[in-house]
Length: 231
Image (cartoon, rainbow, N blue to C red; front, side, top):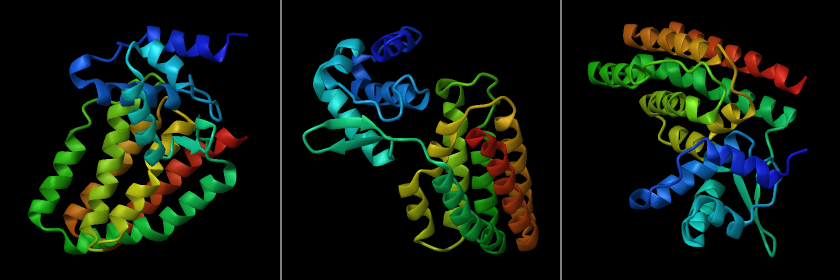
């Protein structure tokens, strides 16, 4: 069986190494991709010196990247032990996360439909239009743009709901990042984009009832597509 360090090196070989001019962000994105693709396995200890050697950088940008990943909930810092990769959501956490989303996000969509202005409609349309293609392969690099779109689209609806606590609450949870970390599967992206279109059109029509139903259908679809991961 290949060692964990060997898996990391093999994964890095398929990626470009960080460029010095945008070093900190590149190291962050590179290590994040290793975590998302499980090349750095859940629960694995993160050796800063080894990561710095593999990435051909100093330890400083690696430390900064791991601190940022801790704020994303992807790494955990423990006294005297350093950083480890955060565990995946377990089944109960997954169900609790979706339970929270079902309580808040259909309501947010209905409020957005009631409150949104033509300028807000245009902003939602522009956000949706950033998805130019749906990835076919199952890797974080392929899904990176879709993950960002998913987070932006939902965050904008949260803002348009008029509740000033909703958007920052979800931002701290990073739900889309942790859900995508569970599984990248063929067809998941296309279905999510189609569901987003239904939500967008309901909000643009100003139909609170339809927007609430479309968001509920989207959450149901997302949850049901991922439940088999736990089987």
